[in-house]
Image: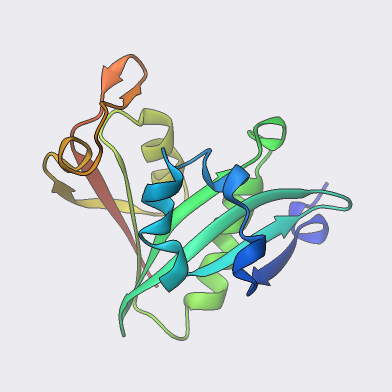
Length: 155
């Protein structure tokens, strides 16, 4: 099955319809999502009958777009949809920006692998990001998140 034929992408312009239930799979709290969502372009990805994923793109500057959130519903994970979304993002950004950046937790081995598999390369670390920006400790893979790993894809 070719995922590209089954996924349809839709920009969400109505703030009342932001897919918070999906976005919360990739971000810890509605408060943290609210810090960027209203300044981002928000998309949903749909297969034949379901909204299965969502993502937010935030313009950092005229050369750089940041993927602030990408989330695929749990029952649709590990089927290639995330990579299809990344391909779509590359396609819509290639003539407008030079770079796509994304940040993820230092313990997020699966996330880091996913981005690297899709052509991103590590380029920086935001020290103590998860300690300084969240009230409660966040654990992933049994380890407290501390630093944010930044990855970049050059268009």
